[in-house]
Length: 318
Figure 1: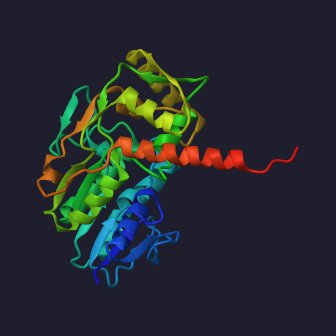
Figure 2: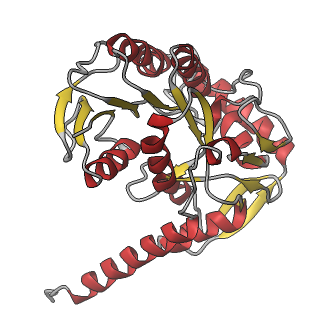
Figure 3: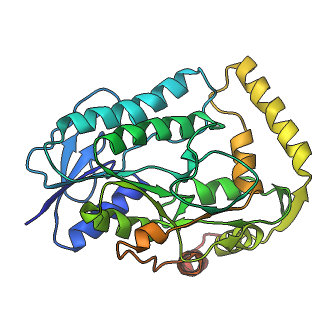
């Protein structure tokens, strides 16, 4: 039986990879600070320790710190300790096993025209600490001969980031977005999971991973909100105004020693410009993206309506 070590297996992406690996007959080693319901737990603090990879035939590195911390803050240092230092320590423990690292399309340089982003797109001028840390961590992995996957805006069941952030920003039935409607690549966690398990046989290098086709931003956001039972109108704010406001918010956050700004230039950039990943390199290895946003919204809508029916059937005391 093939043994696969999965770091961050109790997290969002890692838990999906662990479940899929176990379903296919892999023996799963779940590395992380918290136990995963799947596989044998191997305790590992990515920020400080070299992991125990004894018995592992393959390694999928999902563990990561996410967020948008203020540059120079303790939160940024903690992020680098995991995303850069953790990758270095993981590679110290590797003894010839194939390694797949989940990176991010956030490593790509910002700019107005990203309508066809290949893996050769520049990796610099990052607008936040997360992009910088992921770029530095993946550079270490690439130099060591690993496969690096670059998804964009990963979503799916158990998503702790994308959908909750959108839902939290609806005010009085309105969600305000920067600039005009644009086309964006998104990545279903199932598509990323398939790539993680397939990529252990791929040649070393970076690979974009995204859904079969890009989405119009506004309709995608409406679909996500509707699936959670929220009907909201989309409003558009002038992009120069939002960019200026983001600079002000970041400056105030630095002065107040906030962990993260309420919104940032990075967030504006990711929403206001078309960003479409070219996935032909991964497809050339036989990977096919089979899931789309419709699959997710249909599943979440079903869950939401089922939960609503259960609530309506509950006995009530009057």
